[in-house]
Image (cartoon, rainbow, N blue to C red; front, side, top):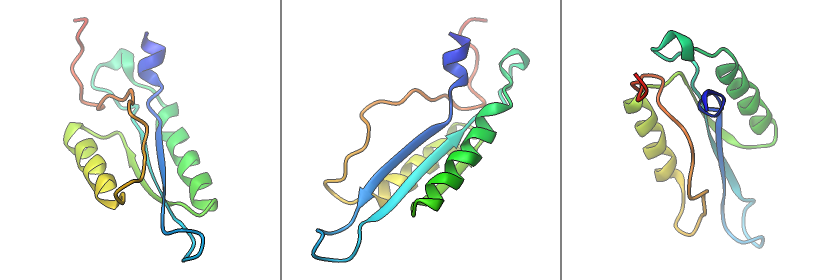
Length: 109
């Protein structure tokens, strides 16, 4: 279960733009990598580094990337809001994601 919590590099990419007869599609991505959790046993070094690598790769592929690392709840909500504002009507994004702010309290004690 801890391993699942550690997989917090979240890459969400959506294709935007007009039809092929118009300008090329605009591609945007939101990449979140949380690893600096408040609970010492949960601190992870890989997710922020993985997020950096994912953001670099997406940028090389032509995406405009919003990279967020070690975000608290407020920062993550802001990132999701900004990303949502950039999406055009009709663009699709995954329906579910599994992500937790770095400042999330432990439910197990």
